[in-house]
View (cartoon, rainbow, N blue to C red):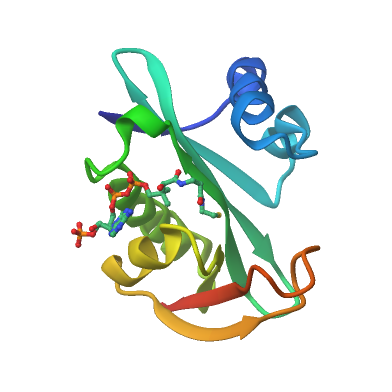
Length: 143
Ligand SMILES: CC(C)(COP(=O)(O)OP(=O)(O)OC[C@H]1O[C@@H](n2cnc3c(N)ncnc32)[C@H](O)[C@@H]1OP(=O)(O)O)[C@@H](O)C(=O)NCCC(=O)NCCS
């Protein structure tokens, strides 16, 4: 398993994964080129199996973890945990005071952030567009 920062050459592969699994309006090329954002990917045998990222906010000196995603057939192998630990090291280099992350309460991400020693620091039952059916949980890791 190799974890590295994405380059513009990765943008179309990342966009394909996004379109197939996420369907979010995310422009990977733009994000990779942005000076505030780092996109990271996990590769197994030269195939992208996981994606996440880190976006720095100057006003409160924090970095937010961008959507973390592991291909369904590669889950429960510790890949996301490795990626988060890598991201924590990268955030230390940014010299932010705190890492923040958001996770839908009914998914697997709360287990992941708890396993990575993040602290649940809040929730918002109006964050998503589903009238409170899905609750956003927020996690933090102080540096
Ligand atoms: C959340 C997600 C990234 C986890 O990826 P993963 O590679 O399967 O996670 P890992 O194998 O690294 O597991 C990390 C920890 O979380 C726990 N965990 C992960 N999935 C779990 C589940 N379904 N049930 C219970 N615990 C779970 C593991 O036990 C592990 O802890 P441990 O190492 O202390 O035992 C993956 O399920 C995913 O891509 N989900 C869809 C996208 C998503 O929901 N993203 C989060 C919103 S931003």
